[in-house]
Image (cartoon, rainbow, N blue to C red; front, side, top):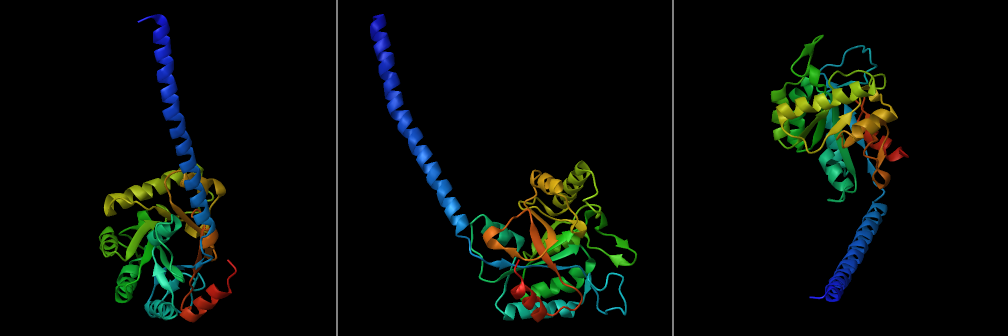
Length: 280
């Protein structure tokens, strides 16, 4: 074959490749643009729905005459049950953090009046008094544990064991997430120490409760820095909870989830009024 024929054949093959490859590239670009535009459209069409996240802590059967924390971090099982019953009777649907994550990624739709129940610190009272109420009403909740306190009794206050955490998790009603390893003011820690603390807390959780596809972190005392938020986001934390208020699904920021702290014996009607009167 002459050199000229070889060149012509090469040019022919090149032209064929161009005719095939270029249209393919164009098609891929068009599909990508349409997909991105559709996702943006879906996001912009997200409903303007309030997502209250209620925050409870420890539970006691008898309210003391005085409290150093002004009754902000204790409650009674009877009051909690009244809250749940009232919310359900008024049309609220109690969802999990997993439900919120699925709705946020457009896998599912939110109910018209969603609400999330959370507990901080990992007190034994959550298992002793609250878990039976969750079972009674078949409602979901998330418990944020301090991993260094698991199985401990400190100053007369008992904390959950891994066995109790696993039992509640296996029921399908309770999610277990991190409230840190040491429970200190994380806005005052060097960023690497904060990062390592949260990573280590999840290593302990996964060692005892299995792999977590969804990782949520609640800052102790709500103390955070923008650098901390950015660091945890870059290290696999899907949702971060650290402020007071109510979330709006339309512009939900999963790295900035707000909660309402429920003080001792706050009624369900009072909770509903706070939700209805909130402007986010």
